[in-house]
Image (cartoon, rainbow, N blue to C red):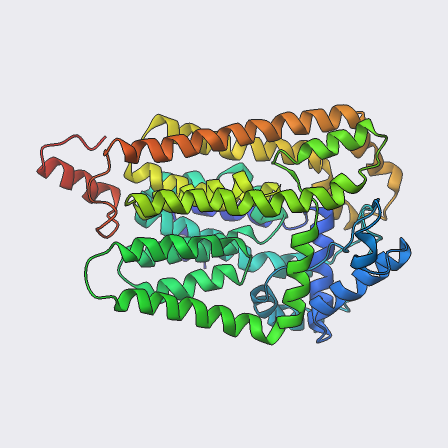
Length: 469
């Protein structure tokens, strides 16, 4: 084992060590979801059914007997309990781990009412088993980036503080990102069937990679040669997604309804609703729980449609098209939680490796710095330490309550809004540089040839007598 570790680059060993040290730390509310997911799976119960039960219990608590009745009156409470609302693949990944964990310790439900501080002692074994696939996904992304963008950019991703926080102490983003990056890599390497399968796995982990299905479809459509590649990609993607969703159809449908009706916020202009709620004394009212979801249902298709239209009108290299589409998703979405940004970071590194520019380096650095600052202020950062504290002591609300009251709520809302609008401005700038470079014609035939690593790309430019930069 030691010999194997000595064979790894030091930056991989360092990144793994940091993530292992973060095992006791986690986002409290998300940890409640993962802990109880393990309980559900260990007892052969569907987390979707638990989501449904908790949701109806929450509505009964606040007197919301049905969605139909609630549409005609101002709301002051969530319509859903925020529990497992992801696609089914994580359940398949964690089912054997939950069963194995149950052999060593008893697993019991730990829930709080919606919106309260989730302060439950979670066994270290559950934390370790949950983070094991995420650690493997991080290594997979780093190795892929090393191949397509060079060791320096792979190291930049693997040791990035924001990436470490998300994968080491938060959520499933990097598992989704690994499948997505693999799908794009397989597409440019001429393996469309495997690319469709990998993209489907990403979509079955979290919903977001599905926005790249039209991207790869359009890119393959422009490639020379027989159309078997397109059929292979479409068949693998659609059949895999269907095979994953159909057995869980009712639960998936309920989870999609949760996402459709949840209010917007975080790194979007919808954060203004949080500011407005503080000005009104904490009463968000109908504009938060009804108006926000409907606005998002309009802006998201418009933003994605604009990105797809750009790709229809002109050939784009696949990393450029993928980066542009993810940027459009963030611009149009009603809700961009901080971890969502992890999907964009390796795409930007790949794009910058093939078409270097200082502007792209700036977008990458600001693209993780702003969500990291938002998370430090919004969670806040000290609450990530709560699960580690609970390994050693019982919960006393007075020990952590001050952390959420460090700032007056209005000032807290204003500062979060400033970070959110800075992020939106960064996305607009990213859209500009991704489309402007292509419109200048500075990209040669990258959209029509397989991906080359950085060294081979430089040799190709030198053979043409051009400067690779």
